[in-house]
Image (cartoon, rainbow over all chains, first blue to last red; front, side):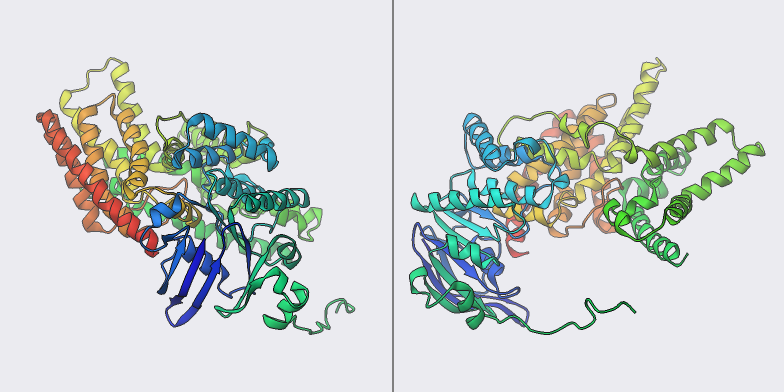
Length: 247
Length: 337
């Protein structure tokens, strides 16, 4: 469902993503893991048509990302890194706009909007302008926008960050159900425990290069231990001034 | 006192930076033309620009600090009280009002004039702290439009309504309407120049159609399965609606021709050189050349259509061509940025 070969993105002399080659099967939940600046968001941006690759090739749902970007947009749902919300639209207006732009009827759009607002606990804030929403509300709005057109492939950049536990559990269950129905989910996350619970395919990148790519069953030990070994270990340094007597 | 000085110093810095955004008026078509050509009407136009600018300038500098941050700082009650008293004096308008009060006492400024300015200042200063209707209540009342781009058009109308360009044009339009309603006979020769003036006041916005869209909004534009001309049309619709409403008491057909011409020319700078704009300020235009081209063409279109109404078809054709051409450029630009 998602495939890329030697996908590379350079910003001047800096190579953010370096020759990425991967395949994600239909109905999989694939977690792309890595430290800050590893190239996760850049990869998602290239796969969703937000950023053209410097070289290499990628296909999503059988369509070439570079040449068939408009067609791809109708088949994918995206929760972008910056959420992509308009300050001058309310939570509900964002969903109504999305439904109509993706070709749904007024009735279907309203029906799906009401359901999503209810399920994501956004109903009370439906008339709040995005510019006045909390970060969690904004994230849930962007998540609802990704789901509303019923996409074949979902790209979620840090979906669980700033989400309350109840909504997080609900999103987790929803994504598992969606995957069981054949929707492919490609997500990035820094929360390893959540990624371990939800994903069945793990890709770890460091410095723009893949350092691990396997199914969940093939992980030799816990995801966290494996991540610390392969990607990055926590820095152990004592900040002596913290907690000491104040000068 | 060191803490108060530190906070006031930071406030002054932020307030100065914010006030610089009023420099946008220097590249605004309306301001440029009133300086260059309209010397006779200059005082009247400056008065309008001044009044429109006075309201957003009359803000409380202390609001630049997020309330949650202010509450967290270890300031005593006395220090907070001092901050409250001292911070308004960071706003130059406070000094202007104080100076005008002295002049009013000496009879050099009428008391009514001073009271009006003071009232505008106080309302603007206090309004954000008052327990008024829910935030942006009026923004909810923006009408719906037919078609799938309804909410995109409503968003863009809200953006247009949060620029001072619109209110400058509104003051001009309402002034003419008031004159007409007061049954004063307005010479028909005056309608066309006033129409051009109204569109001129709006026209810089047409050069920065995406200026109030932040980076997040651009991400969403990239994700939506929309063609570039859809996005441009959704931007243009509120502009054309505002132009129609504001020129109704004047010469609406000429007004529409001028608005279409302003958009047809403005698409180039809107798409090719996106300039971020600030809410409740005048829109800043592109460089001098494109601005002058826009002014000449919008005035020319208005004048020609006023004499030969059929020419509006040619203006519409030019507008459609521009929307199609720059729509393609917008698609490419969004992908490459």
